[in-house]
Length: 467
Image (cartoon, rainbow, N blue to C red; front, side, top):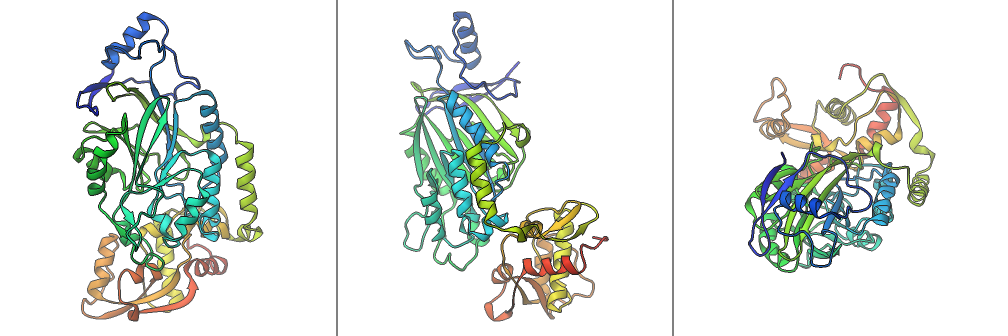
């Protein structure tokens, strides 16, 4: 038996959503329910008196394909693009969206400050996206170039520049898909204020997403059949928002890189997220009664990159053309990893390497700063650009023992033996962490990037076996 959940409608009338056990993507062409018996059976499951308007033999369906947190990883972009084009060529009910953090995480993104990634995602065929916190990695003014490069609108309702104007193309938009008015609102985490670099982001303000959505959802619902929030906040927070704010039908999420087994329900809202780095394609298959503005969840799930069709030739050529701009230096071999090194092991190596290079006994590096594993085998320059894509400088910061202990406890790191709470210690880290922790006069900048320090260490001594 399918399980059912109560759904909300714009006009306040409830509907029931049936969730069948099928996990496959819907067929390339929408199914037309032709027989009276079949139509009655489907209507019974969905709780509808009638699925179609008079004279229309096809229900209003909506297939949402979604990704999030691409982080510059365009290795599978051409395969996803092939899927997108195939769907749009054979169906008229497809909407393709992304939930933010398009950039930062690969040499191609970091070296050219994100622009090639937006050129590639535009060629892939996205319809709408939300800004993520990493879109601010090169300062908020760089977002104007992203908007220019993107063939689709970039939304963000809760972030404004120093002049008080929206930084994104818009706070929300309505897209008409298969006769359905889909209202889309973009929000990102207000914690971005503590995550983004200060330089180039002076005066940028982030409104709490909850406040922005509470204000905008009624306005958007009045002009839409369903309301979809593109959210770069994190899965747990998105579940909480769904419980608290009435009128949201779907939240397509990002930021936490969550890999779900199936889309989740929170109250009357579907909440979903598709891992990261184009490893998974998420999809939701919905039916919408546009007369009563009621939405019905038919199915949804995730399809791994390995199951996408062969690469789209045009997008593949674009990716290869951009990758060629990096030159051969990225493939220079620095050493050999005898085994796979995970992010936590690499973080310990980074802390020790920075402390040694700075000539101090203590180092600190947060978990979010390590962006990739290193697999067994040859280690290239590209690997270390992916481990540390930010290019921030090595610094030391002066901390009291109490301040250092607080940082360590936040990361659940062990406290060094003999650490005095009242003493002051130089701690090796990167410029971003130091700038968020102490005053500028307590920071010493060594004028070399953390990435270059790691490349040098890999070439000279390799990765320790006891990490």
